Amino acid sequence: MIGRNGIRIIYGDEPGQMVKELLEAIKPEAEIKKDTLIGIKPNLVVAKPSDSGATTSPEIVAGIIEYLKSRGRSNIVIMEGSWVGDRTSEAFRVCGYEDLSREYCVPLIDLQKDRSRTYETDGMRINVCDHVLKVGYLINVPVMKGHCQTKLTCALKNMKGCIPDSEKRRFHTMGLHKPIAYLNKIIKQDLIIVDGMNGDLNFEEGGNPVRMNRIFAGKDPVLTDAYAAYLMGFSVDEIPYIGIAERIGVGTADLENADIVELNSDTLNRETGTAGSNRINVSRGTTPDIMQGSMPSGRVRQLAAHIVEDCACSACYGSLIHALERLREKDMLNRLEEKLYIGQGFRGRRLNAPGIGSCTSGFDRYVKGCPPKARDIVEYLEGMISAT
Image (cartoon, rainbow, N blue to C red; front, side, top):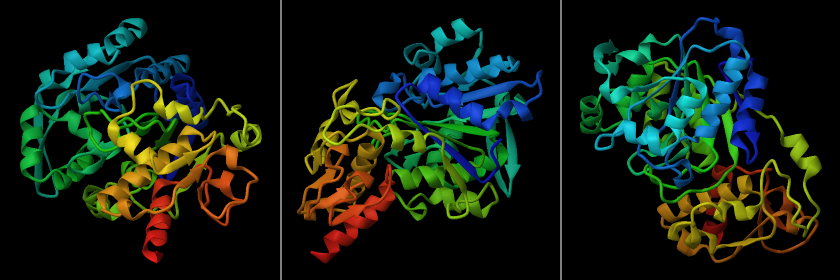
């Protein structure tokens, strides 16, 4: 089991298998009665496949369903309401969820067509779709990705798909952050499984995918989003709805006292290939993964121009890409005078250059971590730039 202050992370390049191993460590069936109606809420904001960086991988949802059914929990529905202007039915089709529904006999609930009712919390009235509050156990499966208005979208913001289109429009007139936080006081998430495989760099509609090859789970959406912000190079203060949600009692953003465990980090460290070789642990993939699938966007290629890479893993490389984007947003990237070195090919080498990750621990200067978090990289690079 996992406590309210827990986060569990797994790395790899096979999301369906990864999520089953993650669930095996968490054992959510211990708190789900066999006849409980389980609702799975992915992020299908637009009708684009998951390799665009916009939507939840159907492989992850399939893995969740397979795991639950293997434990005798078969009363499952998938619920979503795409953003205003897109049809959820088209997103279900394009994103592979119609096929998934047929294969596993799991109904698809189009929340754009659902009835809704008004709920009040702390003086704020919000309309919520009926099916969302009918389920007995809610599994939120957001994509960790950038957002053009809120900077980050993950667990808390994914609940916006659970309200009618008219309410989504009203949220925007209210500034998004406050209503997102209060919505999460009405909708209680029982388990959060974050698709951190291939989320977009800075836009909820996709187009700038960054492969990071990880899935992580939590029970507190505030803590989960605080961790996601850290992974993408933000401070919690830069995402106002996280702080608002914490203040009104939705959860805590206290990462220092969180129980954070990487499930396969020891195995990865033991099995990593030798320096200079192309034998990378299959659990994390190879650096070219970040350039596989759809062609990387011009933005990602521009950021990669600051990097010297040799056999880096996707989790580490993706953190660096997010960190460089944060510097660009702060108008500091143009002041970065040195190339950044990353990858297993630099293990055991000594260079007077900035290294990223534990594989560059022989360098005179490097950022610790395997993989390092984007926020740690940002802070390091900001200090380096300020010193020049």
